[in-house]
View 1 (cartoon, rainbow, N blue to C red):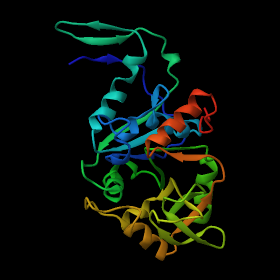
View 2 (view 1 turned 120 degrees about the horizontal axis):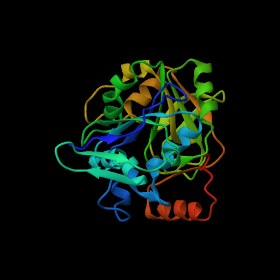
View 3 (view 1 turned 30 degrees about the vertical axis):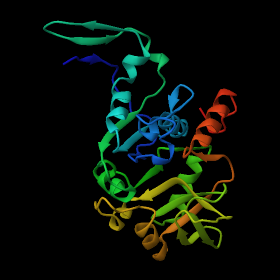
Length: 277
C-alpha cells in the first residue's frame, strides 16, 4: 500500500464538530448527476459539500463528521485523494512504495479534520444522526446540517444563540418559497409546531443549519426508518426543547436542476452570497 507523506495535522478553531448529512439518494436531482451522490454535485469546480464545509471553516469550525450512505465511496475517495489531486506528487514503486507531495502545502488552506462515517445505505436522517454519536461524545453541543444547501448564515451568532437559551435544539429559520418544513413560532424564538414539507407555506421554514446539544440523542434511535424531521422533532417541540434562530439573508437548497443552474450562475458571476471565505 502506498504511504503519502502529508504534513502533520494542526487542530484549529472550535473543538466541536460539524455533522453533515451526506447519505441521501437525491432522487429529485438525478437528471443532473445520476452517478454521484447529491453532495458531490458541483458548484463551479467544487462539490456543494465542499462549499458547505468552507462556509463552516470560514467561521472557524474545522472538524467535520460526514454521515455517508448512498455512494459514500465517492465522497471517501474525494477527500482521501484531495491532497494528491491538488499538488504535484512523486510516486515510488517497488518494495517500499510511497507517495511524496512535491508542491507547496501552503497552497492548500484547508486545515480540516474529517471523519468519514458509514451510516447505512438506506438510513433516514434520524438514524444517521444517532449513528455518529460516538464521534461527538466529547462535545456538549455539535453543529448539524444537510449536504445540499448553502447560506451566509452567521454561524458564530447561531452557536451563541443556542448556548444562550439552554434548550436542546436550535433550528435556523429562513423565508424562501414554501416547500419545506414549516415552523410555528411563539414569542419570537420558541418553536411550538413543525410541519414537514407542507403543500402551501408562506411563513418561516427550517433552513437546515442546526445546533444540537448532546441530550438530543435521547430522542433518537438507529432504526433505518427514523426521520429526524418527523417524530424526534415533534417530541422535542412538544417538550419545549426547540428554538429558532432567524436568518434573513441568503439560503438556497440544491434540490432540482433549476437550483443547480441558479447556484452555478451565481458562482460563475462572482455573486455567490454564501462565499464567506
